[in-house]
Length: 133
Image 1 (cartoon, rainbow, N blue to C red):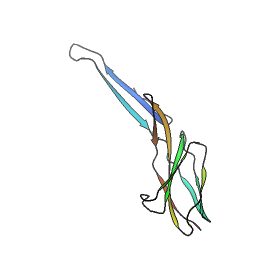
Image 2 (cartoon, rainbow, N blue to C red):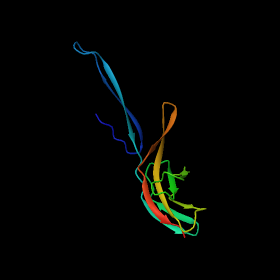
Image 3 (cartoon, one colour):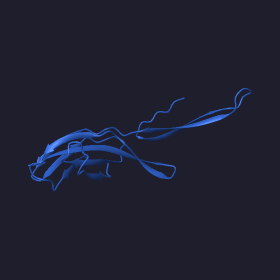
């Protein structure tokens, strides 16, 4: 058989065999994680000490994570914003330095519960550069 997942999340598939004259019974569990759809960063425009971001909604996501920095590799001085509302599709970054280029990336996440623990499944990052006025 097969399993069709239409939304992001986690599926546990159990395959078992019955005991026969030649084989003993066996059981295997396989966990499949379906990541949310990647978002499309539609716009990143700079204003005075601000940057405005707009992105597409990710179907089945629980929220979004945004990271931004003046470092093009987003390794140093990275600031992070977590948006817990999946319906949000825009955000203004404020208190930025004037006349600087900022690199922004965004990804969607889906929160799943498994074995009493809450885990986040992440989509891939989408990145853009924006110059602040």
